[in-house]
Length: 488
Image (cartoon, rainbow, N blue to C red; front, top):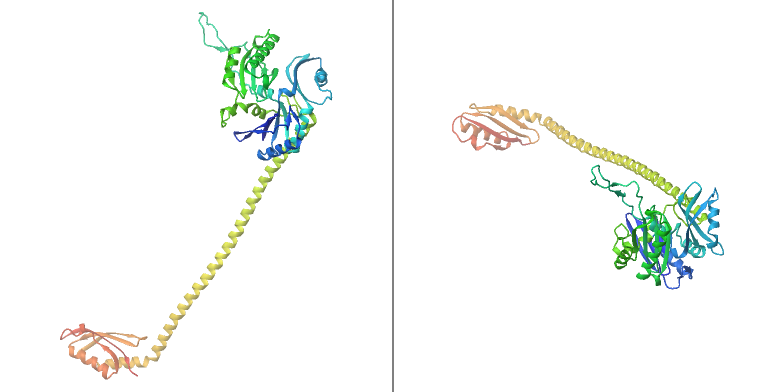
């Protein structure tokens, strides 16, 4: 994850992409912590960086540090017949511009390359400006992956030009529609970055490569001084490359703390349209999209190790090698984490499956045990009911056997005492209750009544009952009679 910092005497600007949303912040610094780029109070600055690192999670981020034109030296030089010692010749060319102690952060961008020579834009920064800052950032746990001049970040974000067009004539002399031109190759651009402490001016050629930079201090950044400086830069650049028509400045952009009145004044002075450079992602305020654009532009600095001089990265060679190692280690750690997470997920899935199977097995065993117990209980109940029923039947049989003599005697008594006009067609004996039910046909009602009285008196039976329906009619009628066994 990338983050970008720009440090000034008054504060620290931060830009970080969180998903598709930029996180922007301006952290003010107490007066005296940094003065003219020099760190005066290391402890306080470290405390600020520690707070920033926690607040914006910079410990795991690749941080790009932006450097103002105020603290760098830049120059376009041409090196001829360099062979394989280009770096040595470039160092020799800028030796007179380097500080006495020779401690510089150096890199260059190749503008043009031919068979015998190369045109390069050389950038160097004083070590006494960057050394303390990088050391304090490192002590605060902030990983510096690149150091880029703000001007290069701005030039890298110049909008792409539309394909140039040219009108062509048809055979009859009329004009046809515009078609892409084969000769026009674009135009140079001017960028104006208005900051709180300074104004940075950048001229980029038609290929987007920086050709000229300038910086105006705050006290000289008024509208009149600014337009005068822009006019001087433009005249110098176009005069230097006057033979090339495409070298003329055809595009102008303004960013930073840009005001509408300044944009209009520059447009009038240059007689051209002036556009804003702002963050394309949605932010809270339009002013933030402009003022934070220079630090936001640092986020996509291409990191190459070793340096390929297509982009400027002022990070020293030893730190670049360290960054390269850290990035490789970070990639390996990231891969290891992904692999660990993947195999960990597989292990968790396996454990979850194993736990589920074990739980299912114990659950099934428990269900089987409960079913077996239930079956045992159910079988026991059935057996008890069957035993009860069997005992009842056995008791009935025993009682029948015990009452067998009495049964025969009763049948014999009924046969002997039945009157002539009464015929018995059916009888039922209930062994358990020792009760009888007799049904048949009687010729006379008096005969049936007499038979009932005989059963009760002579046979000594109890509860002799003749239903009224059997006594309703005189003469022949079907009857039903019941009684209980004889008394002992």
